[in-house]
Length: 220
Image (cartoon, rainbow, N blue to C red):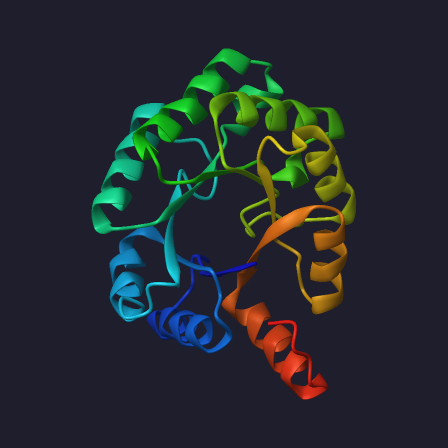
C-alpha cells in the first residue's frame, strides 16, 4: 500500500538511492522522485518489475498551465513511469472555475491513457466543501485516485479528510493519504477509513519500517 517518495526540494541523490533500497527490502508498490531525478529511480529499480515508478505533475503547487502539465506528463511517460500524481489548480477550485479545473485534470488523464492518475487536492488549503467538490470533479475527469496532499503543505492527510474523500468517491476511485502519515498506527487507522495507498517520504519511512521490525510486525 506504500508509495515511497523522495520529493522535497532538498531531497538528495543518496536519499533517492535509499528509496530504491527500502522499496526492494519492504516490497513497496511504487516509488517517486522529482522529475529531473526520476530516470535515476527507474534505473535503480529496473530489475524489480513489481516495484512501480511514479511521476509528479504540476508539483508541488499545481499552478502550471494545463499545456505545461500535459507536456510534463508526456515527458514522464516517455521516461517510463507507471503512474502519475498531479496537483490540482487550487485557485481555480477556490474561485469555482470548475470547468477549467475539470479540463486541467481530464487533459492529464487523457494524456496518461492506461497509466493511473492520482489527483492531489492539497487538503490543507481547502474547506470540507471544497474537498468534496474536488473529489467529484476528479471522479468526473476519470482519475484512479484522489490524494490528500503533496507533503509540502503544513498539514496533509488527516482522519477527517480521508473519511470525507472516501465518503465522496465511494467505489468510483481510490483514496491515497499523503503528508502527515508519521506512524503505523495512523496508517492503519486511515486504511480502515478507506485509504488504500499511502505516500510516505523516505525520512519518515525509515522510522516506520524500522519500528515495525523492532516490534516484530509482519504487516509489510
